[in-house]
Length: 88
Image (tube, rainbow, N blue to C red; front, side):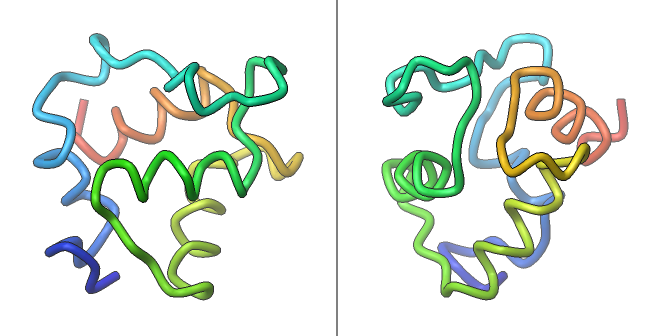
């Protein structure tokens, strides 16, 4: 992904500095209070972390989190994707 030293989804581990069990869906970015993150909300979340992705890179990362392909990332998808990338 070549942004802020992130070459693949597994390197998000170093950005969060916590285990997947400790991560909450970033509610401050859930602007419509749907309990999920839209693509735009997810992009804002990553930008806040200092991760600036090109459109294609963002699509790749977003799609890896949106495992049920409904166009939104819910808490379960968020945490499960991190668990897989952390090898837990």
